Each structure stands twice: as C-alpha cells, then as structure tokens.
Length: 129
Image (cartoon, rainbow, N blue to C red):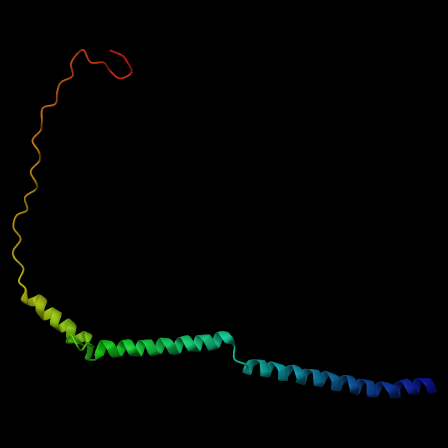
C-alpha cells in the first residue's frame, strides 16, 4: 500500500509539469505566428513599389494632358491641354467642306483579242493526235 501512495504523489507533479510545457509551447507558437505576420513579405514590398510608380506615372501623364507646357522652347513648340486640342481639331474639321462625290466610272476593260484557232496538225499533250 505504501508503493501505491508514492505513485499517486509523483503523478501530480508530472501532470502539472506536462500542462506547463503544453502552455509554454502554445505561447511560443502564438508568439512566432504573430512575429511572422509583422515581417513584410518581399512580394508585398514589390507590389507597393509598383503601385507607387504607377501612381507617379499616372499623375505625370495627367499633368501633361491637362496643362500648357513648353515642348521645345528654342523652336517655340508648346503643348496644350488635350481638351483644347480636340476643340481646335473639331473646329478645323468643321470648316472644311467636302466636295460632292461625282459618278464613279469603272476602269475600261481591255478589248478582247482574237485567240488563234488550233490547227488540225497540232498534237495533243501526251503525244496523241
């Protein structure tokens, strides 16, 4: 009976030690997962860089399309906003009056030439007459 009491007393600290180890392991896993999520992924960094470059390019293009600017100051070439350019082209095209279309004459066909009639002495292909 004394041996049975010793086994009962030693099992409680083992169970407690096992539970503490499981809790430490779970805490360690949670810590690693939270740290892994805070590290930036290289693909996310590249995606953010590409999006920033695209936004810069779009803003530059928008600026070019909507503002007056010098293209070549030495030659006196000026860039104008796209809306103004379309208005000017529309006015220019409306001022041009097209001429009425005349009748379309098809090209004259060449006169038929008389084809030589085959002579009775000519041979047919294959050596037959």
